[in-house]
Image 1: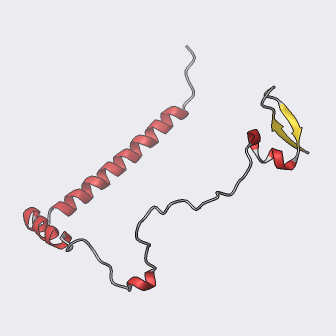
Image 2: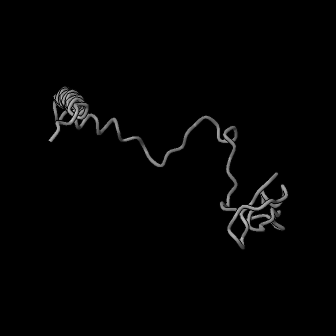
Image 3: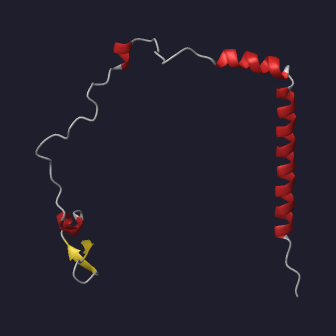
Length: 109
């Protein structure tokens, strides 16, 4: 048996399968006309574009990497690595300490 919420009483009442799957009297309908297109130009299929990717400009990342390597003289990476390792180990130890303290029973007052 199917049930639905009565709009009058707000309680569950018996219902047919069609009315149970169409809540509050809404009936599924098919639109009479197609929705308007969102894009004015149809999209291209991957096979139509070929394997070449088109970008807005040239890739400037290698140039910027060279500038930063000259500026920091290659010392930035080891410093960042050690800082990250230290923060990770410190945070792990702090979490373990907090879990240990939280696991201890409370002292009676």
